[in-house]
Image: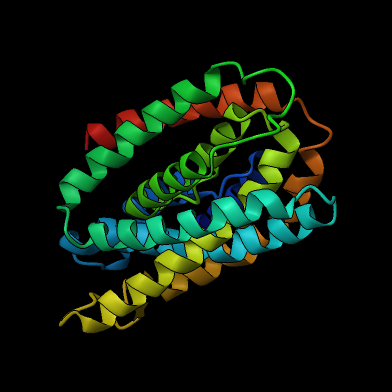
Length: 265
């Protein structure tokens, strides 16, 4: 990896880490497009660029969200009730999504990712549900919702926070508690997906690079992880000080620009 590529990865890690702590997302919304651009330059074969970008993104999310989750756990917002009803579904869904990455064509994955970006950007611009937290919640609804979120996240290489946070807000959880639970949920999604990607890569006849662990590109993973882990606690602290609503709208506009670029490639 050249110095320029390494600097791009380090910079991407900074943004990913801040977003993980600030908005409760794993940073894959930034990392995947970045890697789709960088991996062909590094020498990854065209048919493996998108799957490798998704797998590497989820591997970095394991590191980023671990740091963010530790920071959020100190606030006491991770209620056991919600963790037990959300995390298992996220894990199962992530395993299914990771497997689908190897079945769906790279061009289709690019389009799916771009469509998800547009939908998430629209959702970020909408006002969050208001009202008191619900005292009773359907366990089936939580399980189905979590599994669907995990599947989408594993398929497109995101931590799931951009989906988990609004889902938890829909059942009237306060935004800061939703972000805290989402940070641990993103860690579970990342780890579950990585297990599947490593297994799939090792079983494949060609994982595309001597620098790869399964479908994960190790140099890119290392560079992004270093800075993302350092910046995640900073983002978690800023989440309690900055106007999150304004930041969400700004990031939503950014997602639309990224989606348009992916669709025109």
